[in-house]
Figure (cartoon, rainbow, N blue to C red):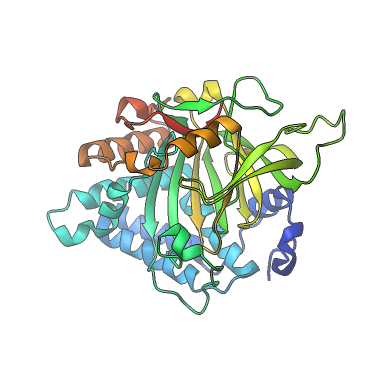
Length: 366
């Protein structure tokens, strides 16, 4: 049995609304929720230690990676994020990460050290972009081949899958760029962009809005109130400079500010152009948190930037060199604060009080 809405051969006809409604109401699987529940219970009851529980979750992720591209894969990814992404379970997962790195055996640190050593914790200007689990890196028969030039451009293991947590909270140093679209008061919004992979995301806490776009050859008709009415953006390859191309582009909105709230999930293919919008006031200390599972890399993503962001990228080709890993103390304190917030033990989360990003750049419009 497969999810009725999903026709992989024609996924260009997929809407975010259909995806959200279908994945949020159905969680067909082949035992993934039961497996995750048992793994977490084993650690809680002392049947396994934290490191073994993390290895079991990583093995489960690897099993899902073996699923051929199509509806069944999306269903399994959805079951994974909807089960492990529930606020109390995600908090338990983060506590396992903390406990594993406190082990006296260095061999126990492999999974958690990969997370701590990542340099993406706040490089986008959002405070908590943290890798949690990663698959093996070798291509499988189920791995979709990447397009020409993707490996050279992306510079990473294309076959790898990653599960990560996203805290939608600007770090205190973040300085976004002025938005030129029709703008909602008190909103922070990403530039429209596509992804290099397909993914399924689950809203663990809070809510956000997302819009979907397509490229247009001419301005929207007068009076249409399109989000980017009469606005020229610059399309670039990838998210980070240096870029190989800067192309003047226009976008047309196909879905406007769709609400995604706690307990909902959705699938997005790599060629869908979207942005994420959050409420500025809520993001300060009650941010939305999402749990995210991405598949293999298949293409170079596109970003559609306001002129000021594009100019900043031109002038700062080494932007990613400013990213840094967290210290062990910062990483542990970040996970502890996230877990307390997810469990409801704390009524706020302010990651900017735990660590400094060291950069004011932000992939966001304000």
